[in-house]
Length: 624
Image (cartoon, rainbow, N blue to C red):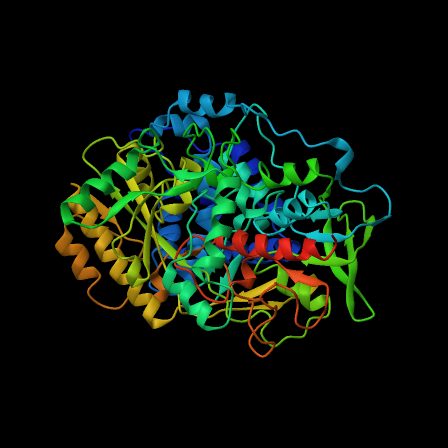
């Protein structure tokens, strides 16, 4: 409570005091989403923060007066020592949303009650109804079933594979660790959705220089349920490189696959009426500077611009796998087991022969006997699972790329009302050839509390100007290489460090985006670099960005992990063959982001689906 009060003091506009009841409840939700070892680690961090204050003030933090509590919090949040700063800001990301998610606070910020009530009252126009006889949520007792193909994971790869196979008459069982995203429940809570539908409450992190969060979905539909919906075909330069490696990437082969997926998911350019807020600001600046810009393609049908895509579309307009592929698969005879975690693949006679899974609540075991198994657990989670299932390839878990991403926030002279926009519905294309991609980004208040790295009065002052803030994001086509290891209890441990060339792309990208915001009339911008955030002129921003960025000072996030089970034309170069079948274990396939052999520079879901569609069609032919 003391930490929350120090981090979020009342200001001139935001005067609502911190509520003990709300903080306890909301922090509790976050803690419940963490694994046990995460809660232990957090307890140790909080204890250190509490008792180290004695060395400076002679008393533990929570017993200090408000002025000294504020000094202690700021000394960590703005410390020149990277470790202290990272720990301080980690603690702030836990407590700030717990206060800002209060609706009274959001209303004072200018995020009106009408806006919040609209989200609450939003119901799907065409709600998804899954056939109850094909759907099982959890297990009360051990069960064994038989099918032709067992699929683990219901994201971009798994769900599409399920529907492609089921539509061709193949008997499919789909196993998903997460639950079904709920719509039309009467109250839409961004922070609660983050904690409920993201793995570990969105706290998955790669360790390296620097540590980088990698948010992963854990729900039916996987990350497609909580992503932005942005749809790109991979750049021709990337596909040409794959073709030279002997992979199926020619225009003649890959373009029809993209078209098939685009038609299935209603992919279309974002229309003008769904563009506003930050997109208008950036378009104005880019136009003045002569930099190419324009709307982006997204998988939507009847979008109402709710602007909370990455927390689960409340209307079902975004054609994530939970809305499109999963219902189609079940309608064609597939069976879905949700809330069940796969433990390992059964291997008999050297071939994949099924899956063993468990309900972590009841302990009941599900055994699925199958002629083929598809692992679609994800680029990161799939690695320890495949290791536990017997894969020994030296390539498994290596060559991880994540599209390191960041953003700039700008304070404009006019009201921007950034929530009146389509997240990632607009982009800047002019630097794509340099490996730099810009996409629109604006976030609801409770998530903005995390996105803005401030504390104390500075944090309150920024949040009070929320209607005048514009935000835009960028990511780089990375050359850095991470790795995923198997940890305790099958949990992945991820390492990743930025390559120097990627740091330079990031520096260059931030400089151009700063220029765009100032060309659009920004009063000031906030760079995502600790210690040099605030700038009111382009000269000031350019000076701050004129030298290499310290990785430890840069705020990054990775949205698109790829490459840990890459396809290759030879067993010497990858984990799966061009049909996505394991080189080691016949009958075992991998269909998720792990199969993509290099960074794309654009959102990968369409490419994952294109290669999944090809592989599923070929697999179905073996049963018909």
